[in-house]
Each structure stands twice: as structure tokens, then as C-alpha cells.
Length: 492
Image 1 (cartoon, rainbow, N blue to C red):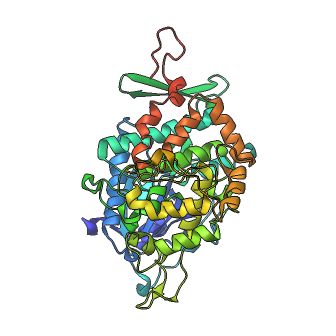
Image 2 (cartoon, rainbow, N blue to C red; image 1 turned 180 degrees about the horizontal axis):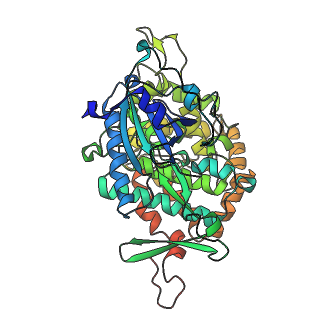
């Protein structure tokens, strides 16, 4: 089978005479190409198999991509990128031919049939490798993050944000319900947008476009302006898992994907955190926040916010101390690029301290939870948070088994409390004065159930997070239900 999929250098050059670079990940690059066989543009992801230690990742991404593509082909769910073919080659694309991160468009941004493109030179045998090519439909508007940046003031209308969130939640619900898929890297960069209508539809004659979704006994009408009606399509399944037996198992280093989006329970519980759908639910919450803040992802809005020194010192003693147990997976993430001696001293390389800022930024954005879930497993991190960021007006957390829990004493101000208070004044979703945060808060409060839905998605406790199905059936989405406002309408 592998040999039958193998394609030559001549095939690459003549079947795809033009290309341009789109994006790059850890193991793969994505290009926009012209397919001369069908005379149309396509997207192609190229994965360097030789760079991947776990070869199962290659097959996993392909299998999940094809399964979900079938959902779109059979009109079960249109919110997945279509896969059009797969092949392998000993050769990777020439940067002179298809572009690179440094020179994205060596032959312009579009294929020109009247132009004669120079064929690149065939690489020597010593540069041969093993590459997997996946042909996909090309989504006209690119990923959602870039789409937002192209809007006026980098902001979407609240109704458009709701429509996109519905489609994202529906794709995750279908993928989980049909195949038990956990994506593990849900973010706007992995949702792509394509036009809902073809060019034959006149926006003047048909000012609105409606997507109808059936879910149980309900029908939802996702109504958008025809001129800007788009389909959100989930893609990039390199980290996806469809194995049911993994649910409830301890988290692995492979579950730490985009570190800025790491769920807080992973950082608080360490090795006691478990795999499951909670990662995707939290990621969907960050997507919701991004849709309504506009501008940029939360980590760019909070770019100036960093973990304060005392909290960082305590977390470092928990996460990186060789004598400390229970956080081995976190330590491996932080120190994945360093070489150590037998005593744990760094000989070469630098630690990745992203997770320190990530946890603190979540505490600033969403507040310190009143209920310390799984206290036994995460008590050391909870104590570090409380002792460093605690203020006098909050009770000291105690074990539920204590008889005097109701009369817990008030804590003293922590050494980092003043910085935490100031950061919250600017960036908290409850009170932050930052213009992007304030705009999101205003729009979410104006929409019935918007703020409640966001907070349920980003709950620190994975067992209390809203699921994609909860999102679809939420009060926030109620206005999309067919018959809303009519006599006899039954609320969820």
C-alpha cells in the first residue's frame, strides 16, 4: 500500500506547478498549490515522517482527518476540512517552487495559466527522506485568527461571533459523539473559514444566509449576512486521540500542545490530571474569549503580564525540583530542551517557562477559584497560589474534613498580592479595564447567558466544564433555535 502511494519528483513538479507557503508546525508545513489535474487550488500539508519519534502520530492524523472528512461529505456535519487524497514521496517541496517561511510567494499569490514557471532542480539522493502529503480543500479565508485581524478594528460583530462559536461547538460535538475524538489543540488557528455560498448567489437579492442544524428534537438556524457568511471547519488532527481507553488515564507529555492553552488542572494537579474531553472544552472557552475580544489571543492581550517572583519561585520548587514527586510530566515539558547532570543541574539548553505565565494569566483572567478541586492532589500548588496572591478579604482554604471550616481565619496579604490586584484591574474578565477585555465583557453580558457560558467553559475543574453539547443547548444559543420568541416556545 505504501509503495502504491509513492510519487516521484516529476509528479510533484508537473501535477503542482505552482505553490505558496501558508504555515508551519513542529513536523509539517502547509502550502496553497495549483493542481493541474483538476485545474483548481488546493491545500497540501507535508509531514516529515523522519522527524517523528512516534510513527503512530502519522497514521492517527490521517485516520482522523479521513473519518471527519466523511462527515462533511455525507452532509452530517459541514464543519470539517475535506480530505481529497494522500500520497508519499521521497522528496519534500522545493522552497524555490512552493515557497518557505522566509519567502512565502516565490511566484506570486495566485497561479497564472499564462506564465511559464521554471521547474526546480531535482534534489540529490543524499537529501531524500520520507514525506507524507495530504491534499485538502483550500478554505478561502484562512484560519479564524487571521480572519479576525482582517476585520475593521480587528473585531467581529457579536452575532457573527455567536454563529462561529456554534459551528465550532457542533464540530467538536460530532467528532466526540461519533468517534470519541479528543483534539487536544482547540484554538482559532485550527479552525478554517470558507464561503458558505458560491459566487452565483447575489447578496443584494439574498441579503441573509441561514445554516440549519438538527440536534435531537431541536433545529437551529444560524443566520448570517450573505456577504460575510462563512463555514468554520475544524482541522489539524496531529494531536487528536480517538482511543476510548485513554479517557481517565494520566496526562502524557503529548497532551501538552500549545502551552499557552494548557488547561489549569494540568498545571495544578500535575501527574494526577487525567486525559479526556476537558482539554477541548477549555480550549473552546479560550476560542469564545478570543471571538469576543477580537484583536488577538489572550496571551497577546496579556503579553505584559508575567508570573510574579514569589509565586514563580514556589511553583518552580514544586514543578522542577528533582526531590519533588507528582509533577514529572510538567518537569519534562519545562525542561524538554535541556541536558542535566545527575543532580539535575542544567548543563546545556534553556528551560521553557511558558507554563508559569500561563497559570498566572488564567488566575488574572478568571480569578482564583473559591473551591479548590482535588485538594489532596493539588494542595501544594493551591497553597502556593493562596500564600502568594491571597488578600485579607478571602478565607484561607481548608480541608473539607475540618470541623471548623466555616470559621476559617482570614489570610494576610501575600507577597505578590498587590501585583495580582493591579493585573486583575486591567485584565480580569469581571472588572478589567483593558479595552479588548471590557468590550468582550460588555457584549457577553448583553447577550443572555454569554458570561455564564464562558465561565463554565473555562472552569478550573474539568468535571464542571461545559461540554460542546452544553454550549449548543445553552441559553446563549437559545435565540438560534427555530421558533424562538414564538408562542409556546419551550426554553431549555
